Length: 583
Image (cartoon, rainbow, N blue to C red; front, top):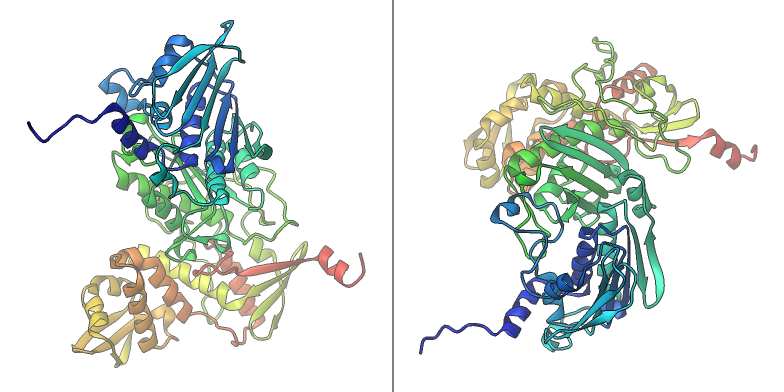
């Protein structure tokens, strides 16, 4: 006899279950997707002991008749695919026909359903994938699926489950993602008999996002490139977190796990987000179904694009100008008010073209986006700031410099305190970035080259990117195994130490997680801007302060330094009056 054997149905079902069902949250996800595909407008999820003892999902969808109900618990039986061609245009959440039989093979499952317009329902029960028991049943229109004693027949898998609190948290995450993806549906989650979350039907993604992220101030950004549409609700840079756990990405309504997409969103913030940090919020991408392959993973949590690079590039380029506009100021908290009208993203008016101060803080009048060929947008924006069009900083009245570090200014509604180094750094960075994009960074040659000692790895980084260094206005040549001669520095950074500037630039490049020199450019430019800007302790004249304020109106992300720190904070007159007892 040969060595190859056909697997028994029981064993095959448990293998399939291992791909689809990892924990109670996996069960909830599959049942929620079935409910949504059935046209449900209300879905209730009940779990006991984190879902290990019980998961119940009840919906008011179209339900099923007896024949469909019997087929639904058989493997690879589905109403969502009929031909191979259908795989290229999947418009439903489910399509494999594996969810119910896989769940039933590792639990005690009961399905009760009644099709719309029919007088009675039908019930099917299975224990551990055994023979189904069927009978008529009285129930409301829709479907109820009860999953009891998950993994009762696979104890080795059950022991890998975490605590009840952890499993409950995963279930809550699944329900939240479903609610974010389908704002037109009401979702209720009950744990051990008590309702813990309820997402009432919302009129828009905007309303749903603000239900889910009640404690966050998120900005709405829109973009469009070719057939792709982007809708994003994202936090300010200072609210970013390590890792992308709080950034949720949806493709055609489906929540997906895609590191490249999350990274593309983070890169749209430019240098204000350090590598490895991601904003809080939700991003929705809509593409033609034929350009997205969802048949990648049994849990349908991953997708593949026909042209992934184009999609990721479009996300970064389309979000950048929108984010640069809405984060022209940092969030000032609950005293803020939203705009009461839609604003386009045209470039702000330029400042005078002649230098206004020895530090050169003028608006160069370049386009708002630092990305060449970026497509203009016209989003509906609700910024949490008092920024009301171009000219906000220019409208402030400079009062005084405090501790040679802060610029105190008066606005219409309160006092504004600017960190002079952060503000100057933002302006210098913007000028460098624009000049680099157009390859016009002016170089100032040194009369006497400055010698710098570096490691062999650092010298290798310099020798591997001479053109990029020249584009930055830096000229450095190796003159030995551990020594480099600096012949030129960017003219705008003429006050910086050439040795320290080169060391920091090379350190930033080698720190950039193996990315090519060009991929680390924003971080490099941010490092360079730090060297050539006013620092804490520098005296600033009234004319210089006013020039800096005017220049801030013409730059992207003017409310944050290139490393993400807020440039300005506000003390409202109301708060001031309350503190001094005048209110």
